[in-house]
Image (cartoon, rainbow, N blue to C red; front, top):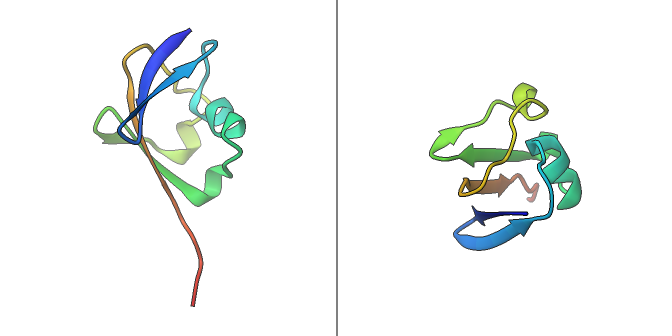
Length: 67
């Protein structure tokens, strides 16, 4: 288990995950979100390769249509 910060709050992940798996757990579509990991924007094409570690700070911004 690892404790991370998600959108300013504490969050615990049960096992090592990459960003793609983490989004699946949160039921978020990867192409409708921007992720900032430890102060840097994560490239969508790299979500599968980026592992989440203890103490990471993740900010998620979801795109929502409207009109």
